[in-house]
Image (cartoon, rainbow, N blue to C red; front, top):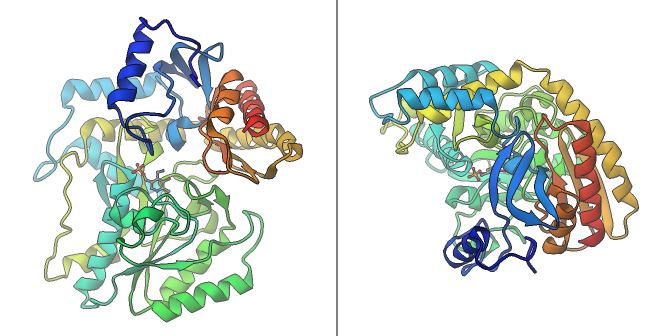
Length: 440
Ligand code: PMP
């Protein structure tokens, strides 16, 4: 079925869609393209403008922040200005042997705002690569110390850390997105996903489970890697920050490094600037991405402590052998700096709280929809979980009909709106999510 309203076959949009289907691969898409796509011609504030109407709508309120990233909405004058003024100076320059103000100032700013003790910043170009770098840092740290057996990672089930090799190896191994590759990926150690929700304190039985796994594998574990407080693309589950404190304690006790993947949770989404702040802990390594540039440009960062950097520098190969071509890209780092200033210069906690209240009120109605198993909200994240796999197209169409862009997957209809979304638009997103649950 077409999402766009019936198109004149000679229209530009029809041409674009035909070419898209013929040549363009989309995330998790089949080829040749059999996925329905909407053509977006521009975006401003929280609205996506369509090249031709879909379900009678010419624009859609964005309920997804382009997958967690567009926290300030689109076409923001401050971010536009940061990009264009940097463009006039230098859009890119190699980072080997050269440096520049936007990257240096961004690194210093990240060190200032992330949990105390994170001191060094590796700038890369995507979240997955920042996780690759994090894993490399930890493996190399132990190797430098002569602990060559410490090469494995422990994570909990239901996680998601990206689509390149090391991240795939720590995504949910059962029924997860990378199940196809399980036999080929490095074999990691999996704990159960933490039980409960954000408000349910640590379950002592689970704590024993985690402790016994860390203890049993301590000699071969380089690091524990988890998504703090929210397990995102693996199932949109929330857990109590106490689980992070527990992990910090276990890692310290058994000599294992702790990586927190804050690619989705960083920059306020859960109501704290970083999810680690809910627990008051500092990881050894932290990954950031997505909303780092307010969703404008592709940029990620891996931060580590002095201990990790120093350990690597003591090794027989005292360098971190990673150096992407677009490392520290000036445009992206300039926009990231502007995005951080924009966020911290506003009452962002108030914005997230307001959205949280709106989502709680608006999504409550979904609880009585047949087939809905759970409704949960944390910060500016709202989730409706069904008791069956969602019919993605029926659910998408229902949301679009309400004038909202949502991207359901598996058994989930979820939203993480830009922080600047007004109350009426939050309510509209909720109506769309409920309609998607009814029809999906
Ligand atoms: N980690 C987490 C927690 C993520 O949500 C994502 C992206 N969905 C990634 C890593 C991978 O980031 P990217 O898509 O930028 O490679």
